[in-house]
Length: 305
Image 1 (cartoon, one colour):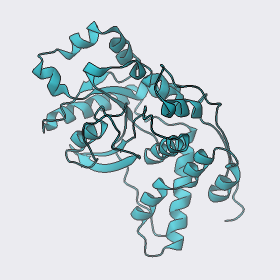
Image 2 (cartoon, helix red, strand yellow; image 1 turned 90 degrees about the vertical axis):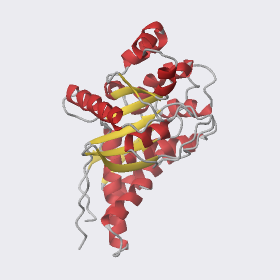
Image 3 (cartoon, one colour; image 1 turned 45 degrees about the horizontal axis):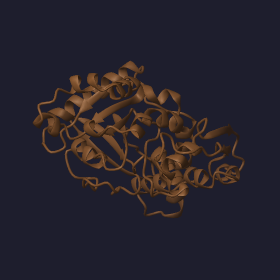
Image 4 (cartoon, one colour; image 1 turned 180 degrees about the vertical axis):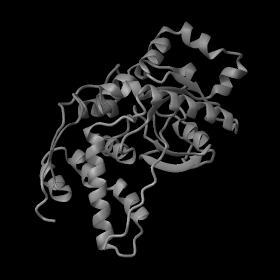
């Protein structure tokens, strides 16, 4: 008999997105209150693959997903596909917030497109679940800059913030101050309430959840000594949803066999990088997601069970 799966349901699932070197990992560590993600300020991305940490903060269970740079120019198309699929797997059943991490004094042309890219990757309504997170708030404080005034005086930044359904929050990565995290969680809670107490989801997240459950069950059957927690952790990193996205053709049979769900996966034709020289990474991301990753899920009775 299979061991009972008792899944911890986080209060908030947070996905950190943004350009390479803006301080996503440091922001994740500040939110979690300890160093869980590798972090160092540099132009090359330290986080080469998606990572996920679940921890209780302020009495709330948080799952934080750290992602490779949205604009990482060094990644191959397959690496980008794998990490996007893994990000979805880590954030099932869907994120409560996409935190777009930006440095206020380094807001670039590429970053103006971030919300549009999130919409292309995760669906149009994802903008309503997006919040801008300014890092290096200490630099602003030191320069005596008022963030509201700063945003109002920069039209591109002002327009960007207004695309984010959750507004913005300023984080000082260098100060160990839990009140700034409490304030961030309160803003996320307000945004979740505004969204009808719902997290963001679409067919990709639903499909990933089904693939994870199927892989977890398979691992537990094949490994009697494995704990459900370990099986789930492994299944989130490697499952047939991720394989299907990487393959992006001929995936229906693989997924259908594993989950009892017939799946058709179609990837939109490739599109060049948005906003000029953003590199192959963004071209691949957007190409992957023209019209969304088109996934038609057809439930059917699994005759093998």
